[in-house]
Image 1 (tube, rainbow, N blue to C red):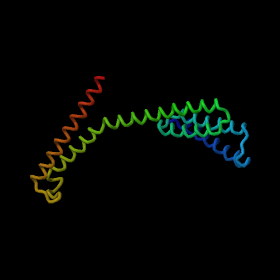
Image 2 (image 1 turned 45 degrees about the vertical axis):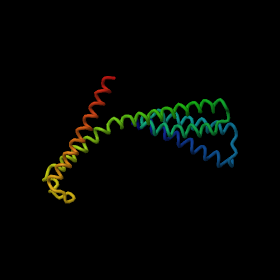
Image 3 (image 1 turned 90 degrees about the horizontal axis):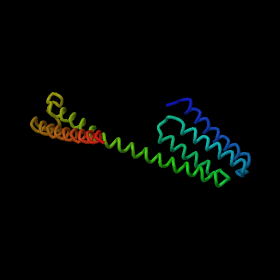
Image 4 (image 1 turned 90 degrees about the vertical axis):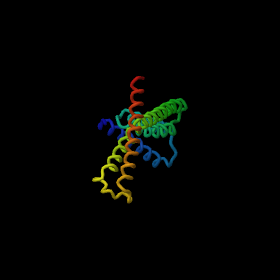
Length: 171
């Protein structure tokens, strides 16, 4: 994370909100076109500065979308509203694609995680010194049977993980 850029983005956001409070407080909620344009530009600048930081992209996109929407709300001109609306649409696409990429990456690792969990459980159940043969009153033979089941499930998950990994490397 680039701390100076992130701090500058936070400062721009804070300036925009402070100016909004100042103008709305002094004008009793009635803003001139010039005031609306100032607020629109401040919120737009804050949104752009958040996109320039290297924080997790989804959080910055969400924050930038909110700031762009606020800029769009204050803009007195339709062409500016249209431009800001296009930026919002682009950011929503980026946010959605980032979420899909994250889900794909997580989905690829689930078999590996399950494999490790099953193999660890198999070790726990098959080793009589770890359980002390007193797991829910099962006998030693039953515990080894359960441990063998976990071991087989772990091997199957490991096989699935390696098969998917090999298929992805070929692409």
